[in-house]
Amino acid sequence: MQEIRVVPAASFGTSCLASVLEAVAGIERPVIGLPTGNTPVGLFDALRAAAEDGDADVRTWRPFAIDEYGGPREHPCSNRAFFARYWDNVPGAAPVEQFDPEAADSAVDCRRMAEALGRAGGLDVALLGIGMNGHLAFNEPGSERDSLTRRVELHEASRVSGSQCWGDEVPAWGLTLGLTELLGARTVVVLANGAAKAPIVAAAIDGPETSQCPASLVRTARRAIWVLDEAAASLLQPR
Ligand code: PGA
Image: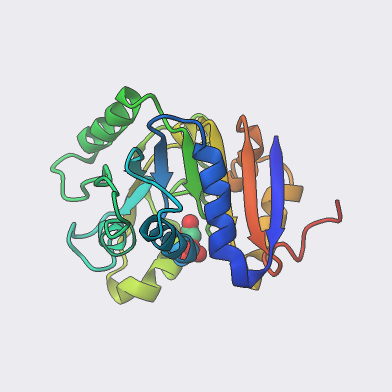
């Protein structure tokens, strides 16, 4: 089941936050998958402000990174660096469980992440952006619904998007939670804003269910909420 929430661009961050707080409500120690990128910046800003004002309490949240670039661990464009900037300064935030792209064996590191997530009971909430090619975390087109946490080769579209920060050094591979772990969450919250995302959002919501567009598999989740600004929702069929 998927619910679509279309909100004004000006309140995108606070609207995303409202959906996240709704998804974690009543869960004692919510396990939450955290995204990176341009899309969730407004959400993290709104969360920090709410936590500072006492309107949100993240102290019990158990955060997991949903993916990481296959680059230097401390690189300023790594997802680890993103969390240092946008999550670690939220009052009460626990350290994010992260992939280690410098692990000697990526398969071992992916198993460590999957086991940590399993011990936590799996995701309660998967917070996701959507890539220009329909990827979810680094589950690129062709990723099957039963894919697991693993190392992947990044598609060209993801490398182009990543090169905004990484420039020519954009990694060729990444580490990602699988669609099994992400779409098995109690609630999946997908965020998208801006007109550039409108075609892929329309394909994911109104197009066929296919592994060629991993975001189209969101509809297989127990509960899914899309939070879209008006521009990102502009090519959806009337409903
Ligand atoms: P973006 O990335 O928010 O920077 O557009 C989204 C994604 O690739 O998942």
